[in-house]
Image: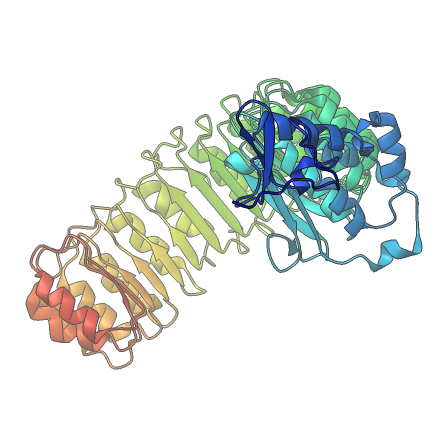
Length: 601
């Protein structure tokens, strides 16, 4: 048998000794007996797990110099001299350590070079955290021409924010950032927000919801670096206090929109700073902040240079004093929402109305100390400017006849919404009808107490022609009201909702088919209509319904199939849910016939 011996030119064997300096290059050595080694070509690649080979591999690797042995201070100096965004992003892909170092570099600390302007799309991929920063994928160019990024739930981590900071720095930086929720294990903290602030000084809009681990330290960095900030939205951020808001106020003079909700550590002191320094503020919304009172709200509104146009105050401990200030100083306020203000009474509305401000839209929700007198006073005093009035769940309104004479009705009011106010009945509605002759949009849903006698005067007093009417849940109304509505406003009516009005029958459909020329949306769910009414409705040649809801109409049966098919020529939506007299086979036929129409069954 041939054997490889005398490999080095002599006749001696070399027991236990390799022929070359690197035994890997020769293959494997098989031991024969106890003293003889024979060479054999390898049939497989050597296992790295072999103790002998592993030791050699480590020895060779240790001989190679590594930049990673440098301390952070040295790497920082190297990274800030990297010329462009592509190169910085490539470095960020090496390790999380490098990514966090790169994200700690402020935009102003990066050494400038000509190649920076030529940067294009960048990609940062770090372990399990992958960030693609590009216009046509995860990034979006907002309407104002800057990049928008949104992180939600488990994707909201410090690593992703760091990757966004590095990846967008070469493309002008981030303009709008939205964080919704936070990863339960490694969520967003001050570290991630600080990375955004350092790398994206162009940030204009910041929105954070349900981010409990971000506090004042993160906002300090934003205030220090992002002087162009225009919009700030903080919701359920319990770690942010007045200190963080004051820093934003003092360093972000362009702030024009502020939304604060469920932030228990933010109070009057923070709002006073906003009122003092943010002279461009146009919109403010404050909800469920127990430390906010009249002192904070008054400072926002009492400035002679205030340009606030939209004010939303919900679940606060303010009193009539704040409403008086809104009326006196808020001359630019056009949209006002007041909700769950338990210490506000009708006196505040009287004072606010008498101030003759610029109010165009007023929404009251769960203001239980407001009465019929206060509402009438607000309408009367804002009679030339108020365009929309909404009352929701105001339990203090009682249906009492008012002896007040109104010489000048509110000719500007176009939209009236009174929902789920159980004390608002026919007497109150008749009074509102006299006050508001130019109504076009009326929503009275959930007013169980109103009857035909209360609604008819309002219908008769509307001179401009009603366009949208929602009477859902008004169970005491009858065909008389619908017939009057169709007869008086059939030439303008586009939407009618009488869901739950069980006293309304086919007679109303006859009036609608005869008089309504432009009706496109009709909801008669749970009404007492039958196949005969649907047949009459389908025979109206001028009617071009797009949405029809007959949910819960038990008297509509399979006999209506040809009539529904005829109506389906213009329908895009048909609701037949809980129609027990319509079989599944009829539904299937309708689906096949009306392929352009969405059918709910």
